[in-house]
View 1 (cartoon, rainbow, N blue to C red):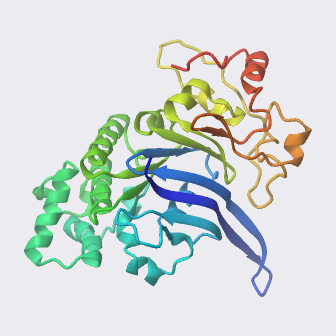
View 2: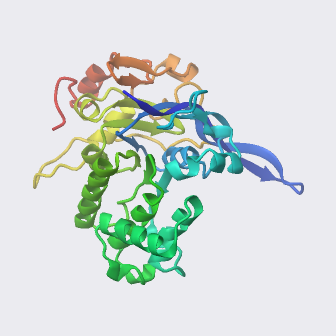
Length: 351
């Protein structure tokens, strides 16, 4: 498959400063070395608990946050002769000169705060276009109207302010702004979490339709596993700044390997009235990213941790084609889960 991004050992550390001179005394390891490939035309879901580094990954990819270390190799459709562009270390001016800003866009979680309340819709959508292209007034208005139509709005909405719209309509405006520069990849940071369930489904269907029409690639950040199951082809499970498991969506839901992934899947509510699910309750709290545990990041909450988990960090290893897991006991977890909790037989589908 054709890669659009190669992420190698990506890190993002936030300094903690203290004392009179405000010197750095520690760092928050929001991302601590992740590797991901993103393929052109796919939707890659990123899931995990709050604070695991999902949103930081998205912001680093579109360079709203400058990475502390690692590489983000971007393969442009019009590939330069010297290969992919490493956008992790580029300055703002170099990003603009390379055209990367137009090709990598982001839709944020809350459109109430991501849309300027003092700007009309036509100016909100026109602003990124004006930064990238030189268009006359009539051409600009035609382009804005075309974008509004693509996201299910009309010309009647062009002279309104964001507060005059519902939450779902505001998110459609945010999507229109994101696709205004003809991007190749869009990071979607929990775009449905602030919406009603019925509106969520409408927005998800819109995103899938736009992906087909515009040949887009998505990175979909969410904590809602059923949403990521609906829209994504592959899923990366993150925990405390690390990728624990990466697999095709159907494979992960059918036969997850990492104990953390299994715990997340066990928390999915069953749709049948009166049905009782046997949840895996993880003990303890997520460790602080200021001082993450040695060895496997998950060992302090893992029911199957052994001595090697406490000493040595596991490397992502293929257990099947396209399915990678960072776990020392990856060959035993299915049986261990069945014995300990009476659930998650590795041969049983989760539906």
